[in-house]
Length: 282
Image (tube, rainbow, N blue to C red):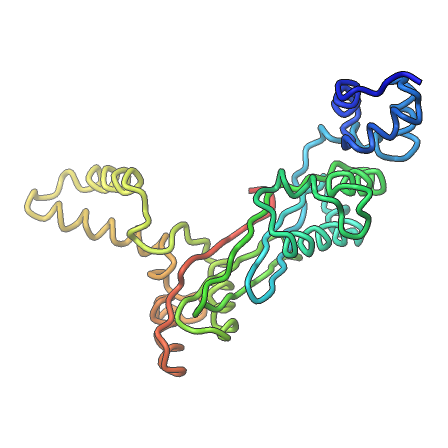
């Protein structure tokens, strides 16, 4: 039989899009014949998925999974909403979230090369190819983030539109107050803050806002221009920074004031430490 070299496996991998182990198996079965190996992969349902790899994926779903120490955010994309709502697609994403929670991969690239926990003869990426074959659309794992939970923090998770928009709030000051954190997550879903607090707004963004503000008041007396510009900058940061936004369920208070009110009831100082707002396709 013809010797199966690593270069042959690499070429078949590039041509088929199938994992290295399966490519080597196919080459062994084909006795080193490249075309026969491709036929073997196609008959197994793996290589057929490659034809769909180039299609644009605009729809999809975001899944979360968490335990006491870790929280996973992961997004999978499909071509249509029809497939994104399919149970096979949902199970694929759920399995990915579950495995990522267990293995805590360093990156998405590392994750897709892991053996799939329900069938260790294939990788996560090969599992994805099988789902592509079953559903007839390109499916991609777009992004993943592993969040390591901090002590003295509560975590609020809000999923909207069937997982097309997901918000995670990391609230510092107390554990076991996930319900309060979820209220803030619902606010973030509705109001789309860009930053947590004014100190996080980049200098170039503030400079641009100041330039715009000054152009709007260039005809005003010089002695009041700075005060007007400062007021406009504050109005801008109040609009884009989460803790200064008017709370969506009660616009008489800001988000931080809402947390202050909740904190007094449990004798804790509550603050948002961080937030994640993921929307499919962003």
